[in-house]
View (cartoon, rainbow, N blue to C red):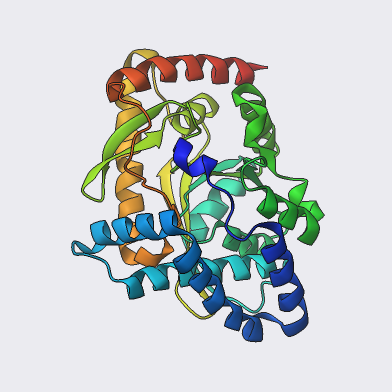
Length: 325
């Protein structure tokens, strides 16, 4: 993750979220959507860095200078998914019109008793996965999150649904501990969901083409998948306006196998494939991109290939040891 992004304070913070919860619980989803406009206006007026980076992203996406109106729509889309998160986390999912694709393949994996890795991103709403859980309560979902980054949203989760909060795997616990928790969840036949578009600060990355320029993607999730050798599916929850979402599941691998001698080339190929699918869906829902920082900026000037190789080998060794215990 960009150190610049991690150093930024949360927009609005605890007071704004508590106010939103209070209003939404009294008025319901429909009337409380009137709050989306002042929230978007707040970001437009007070969050200059995010406004700049939104405009840079949209300019890259559209191939022309983005307008302030388009930046405002970007923030409005983000605010809409934040509001919907309140209802999705409280498991009040009946108010949403969710069109799901790829469930047959996902169900096929889960019905064998095997766990599945769901690789998602900060594109759209990952919380819309809760709709799937409400439809099939026999399926367990465990989500990997960094509790320390975004503390206000972590507290929101714990307030609205402590049962869901208890299933979260804390990414801040460190690589081996996280890998072991993921392995345990998969062994119980759960879906384990990770957001794999952002790297942790200091984590191993690899640069691949994304929206016309090289962007850094984390290596560790792919090394982890190669150790665990379970099915990997891509998941996207795209907001389409109103109460409509597309929940898309795409098969990616029945089990990743990366021999040590071919690890670097294999990881590069996997990340290329993932970035291509992420770009495809980003182009289909351009205002769903919620990485409000310069996604293409590097924090260091180290050669990409060497950076990925050395750190990647170390991560593979650590993840491998944790998965074997």
